[in-house]
Length: 83
Image 1 (tube, rainbow, N blue to C red):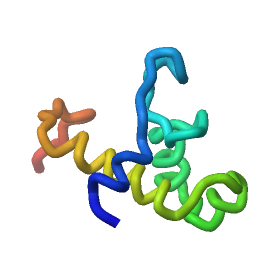
Image 2: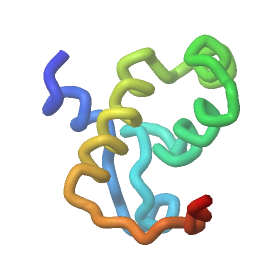
Image 3: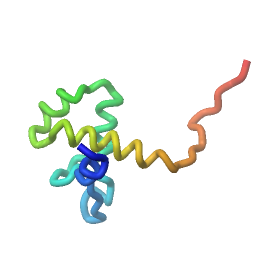
Image 4: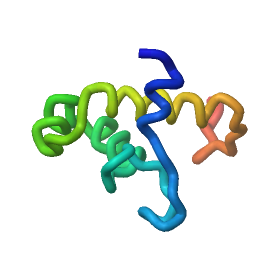
């Protein structure tokens, strides 16, 4: 599946979930899916809980995050101490 096809699975509507990116046709936000993955849930865990989701929806969340970060600059959350 191409990047464009995956990204088409993500939509933003100011009247839905305060404009956060969501998986098309759901009220599941991209950040919710990413947070679950970050905290150890597997793709299978998420798909089992949300039967309307597909593996491509989860891939779309990962791609959306990747594309969103490509042109961003960041302030570090915490400075590392140099020893």
